[in-house]
Image (cartoon, rainbow, N blue to C red; front, top):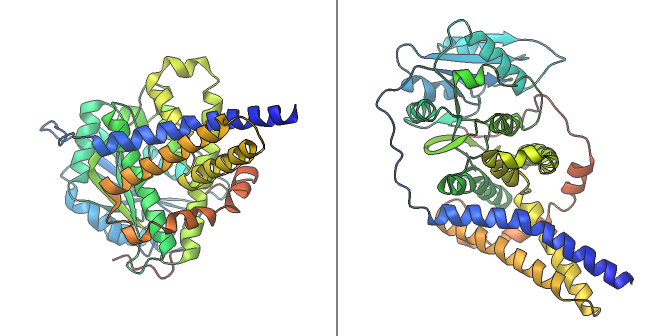
Amino acid sequence: MLDSLLNTVAVSLSALLSVPTAVYAAECAAAAFSRKGERRAPEARPAVAVVVPAHNEEDGISRTLSTIWPQLREGDRLLVVADNCDDRTAPLAREAGAEVIERHDAARRGKGYALDAGIAGLANAPPPVVILVDADCRVGPDAVDLLARQALASGRPVQARYLMTAPADASLGQTVAAFAFLVKNRVRPLGLDALGLPCQLTGSGMAFPWELLRSAPLANAHLVEDMKLGLDLARAGHAPCFCDEALVTSRFPASEKGTRTQRQRWESGHLAMGRVALGALAETATYRNPAYLAMILDVIVPPLSLLCLLLGLALVAGAALAAGGASLASLILAAVNLFLLVAASMLAWSAFGRTVLPARALAAVPVYALGKIGLYPRLILGRTRSGWIRTDRSGSDDR
């Protein structure tokens, strides 16, 4: 009786894990085999306002603005929101020629509140399109034009290809983290786009038609306010689309401590949104909105390391039950899931990741995943911090 119950539970868990695994595999395969040409854009480029939320970014704000200014035209605006800063972020932004809003509110801290203040500051002369760029990013050539034109043509939010680069002397862990970020922020959105589906908003390089953003629920301190905003807009019928041609980059911190803090913050926020997504799957309204449903299914794919660990545990459990005389169903299903994960990841690496993660470093990926075993119970069961959580960038060469 107990053996039968354990086998049923193991099969059920492997079946549940099949959903995020299949979603991940489909996204990677669609991206790898997509052959879409360059997106056609209308000739006219609307006026834009680029909003840069910043919290104590005196070390990099000038460099960030220097990548935006050359792309602006007459009638465009560049607005920095210096949120709860106690450094020289605001005066440096003014020296660089940007409009600046200084915000001080210790009780309401976070990027969402900063963005809300920025949008309020634009309301006196609203632009057709607003582009949001984080203060530690570099905006690639023509990205402003590409994002603005696609937002105007589609009437939808648009997400740029937002990537993290590792330092020149990056550790093995940072290199693997850079590949995981590439898969999350380029490969999977590109796959969704190839399938005609919307993508998540990933935090920087986001363009919005003014009418969508002016009434959007921005004022919050969620750790992944970008993902939450994208889901909120999709639920309202305005699902984001992906613009692979527009590139925005940032750099991982040079220190292991900074990289670890940054990854924990992202993954904690992702897991929190995953719980929200699971709740949405129980709502009938979700299934009446195919674009929103596609984004919900994408959100329930956990961080890659966690998914790998869960599938590995399912395989071990299935093998143990099979050795005890139970059905092979759990073992077979777990093996198929793990094969799909590995095959999809290798496909993504072959098509997009060779320059980010050298072949000689592939063997370190399982070690990297195993090294995070102790992290996920704390993220899943513990309380998450909110507000600005600034990453330690000491020692970064961000030239």
